[in-house]
Length: 340
Ligand code: 2NL
Image 1 (cartoon, rainbow, N blue to C red):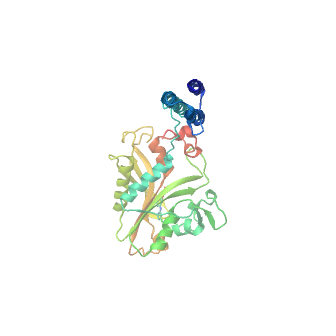
Image 2 (image 1 turned 45 degrees about the vertical axis):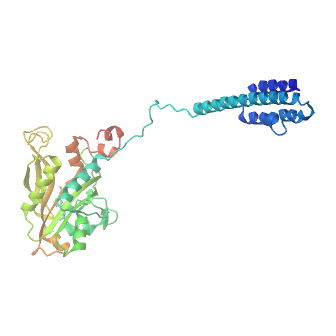
């Protein structure tokens, strides 16, 4: 029987070495050391031995059990180690690989310029007003002192939808609508940024472009208020050392009217290619609101006065960034846009 124990021990040890899964290892353990295991079965036969043989046999079985159990622990640890290595290998990450980055976009230069203008005027207490791009003849022309037969209407330069409806040619109709809505409340102090449309298309004109117009209406508004606001705007927009000058002009909706020049931001006034040697660059049109326009807005021109101005955003963006052709602003060519 001792030989039988040795045989089980050796056979089991040999079998153990070849086991590659933890499950099979457990099955083998039950088969030998379990309640119905081969070694347990031998132990049960101890009754047939003599009193002298019994303790010796017991010792042999216990030794075999110890040897096998030790072997099991070792084999279990080895298999667990192999499983862990496999898992580590499978989950391996190469953190030295270069990352895949997303392409970062940014605002369009026109949007940037519009928001910069908005910030400057908000800082001076203006509100921002918006309105429809499809307008009636009344708000776009008539209310702005441009009656039906007026030569400055430029019928053939406007996109008419019907005889009475057109794409707005300026943002002034928003200002008329605002006055109509809020009168007799004072002051009116707004800017109107937005898209406007004219039948023009070349290097300096686009059929759709952007305007920012401003309007201030209150008791006792004077030309000097206009100058002060526009000087402040020009210095924030183009540099602290800028000066402005006003030249007499004409618009049907303002009287008197003035064109505003800013001292050249490139040469500081000495004369260069950008200012064509004059030292000055025209940036906007302005004037004191015509009494008829105030009236159309619901205000009494005997009680209140106002000033207004309008500027083309594309022109300012071109000056600020040195863009030669306006159409570049609308082509959406990334090689151009990525420069900003
Ligand atoms: C220009 C000139 C200008 C205005 C726009 C205006 C609006 C109202 C009343 C009076 Cl509601 N005037 N707007 C005034 C003067 C000039 O724009 O060259 N724009 C690009």
